Length: 576
Image (cartoon, rainbow, N blue to C red; front, side, top):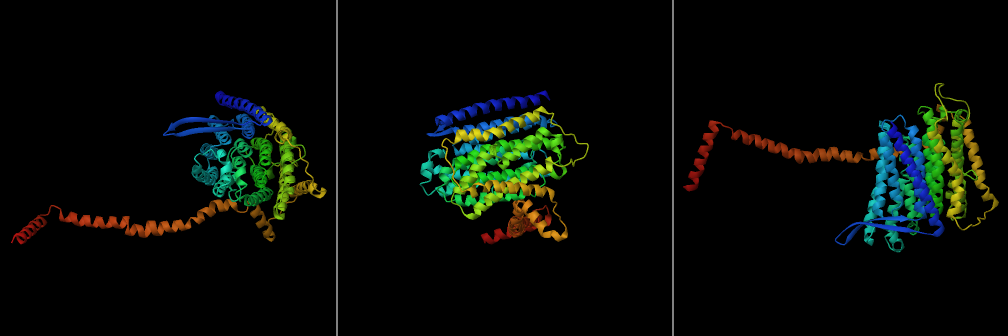
């Protein structure tokens, strides 16, 4: 057991040193506008070289530093959270493989090496989702893997198409792609891959299902790996996507995703799924501002969201760990008095998610909303954007009301405490980062200070929407909706909203139902007429012929003499 704990400490120390080094290098690259491009040639066959390429710029270094830091906190946290697991060694190695795959994706300008990291994320995520081996985890892992395979196929087709340019290093051919007719095909494939990995509509069902994984894995997946891979890929291809004509469609899809996730989270009672739906909502925010033509702003929100979302999941994990794996928010309550430190971290992460001034989420979300006000978009996108912002505050306050306030609703045998250092120290460090990282990144990333001038009504609209959302979230905690026969319409609306607009049913049962034609063809044609007149029919024919022939060739004296006489008769007729 000592070795199992040592691997957690060694991995955390290595990741912490790497993150500090990468963040300092990223700051140096920003200040000096430096880019390092490394080509490592493996071998050459008939003048065709197999080369591994790495791109180190401020974006890749800072993002990789954030991934390393959050992974360090998650692994250190897992040393206590997964203490009762006999396979902790295997779990830590899977997490390290997950981080390595994400790092391969981040620093690769080559589509082949991007595919290695892309598939590595898909494979390791499947292994982590089914880590608790039961039927529910198996189904969730299969849904996650199959949804991500659509993006893998899109990347493979994009690799085949980019081969027309002579290399897979897309960064060489950005200026040529958007001037050619191939920009529509390449951009469409890249957007499809990004939508599947970042769980945009209609591929959103796998994100809440992936909550079957252990909570430390959920913290890593939903903050800086896997779901952010699609957004990061689109940020890298943003200079090409602007000329494709798909950006307006991506804007509509991302806004609907944000609205759908915010609405569904207000009717969800599973603690982890509420946080997962909040991740889906913020991914919609990133995709939306990216589709409007602001990739740096999308990257800024990606980094700030990574910190407070990791903190939110670790706080949720501490509550679940102390309540013996109970996740229903209706059975929680009074956490402030029993777990004050965890509650403080939880509320700071919640307020950062809502965009509370001077926390991490404020610097990115407020800037995104103000830029959306200044962008040419229709009134539907504008309304959905601000309604979704209000829904974010609504489900955050609803979650805080159910879990933090009121009386304790669990059984009296449960023991809650904040005494475990291995779980509290990562939360404290992530809390400090969630408070400070927004201001620090805004100083580093945005050199030019531009004044955004808006009418006072639009300037106060953000504050008004947040206040209204918070009040509605508090009232949803107070009001208990009746589900009697007289309120069937309310029940249908709650079921429709809470089930993510029936998307999980469409992705699972709907897909199986769509295979009914294939089943009918299999039974009637492949296993029916084709078998009767094909393999099975030929088999019966040859079996009958063989049996008849065998009876003639048996050792029967009458048959032998009859055959002898026939041959004599034939010879006589031939020679007469």
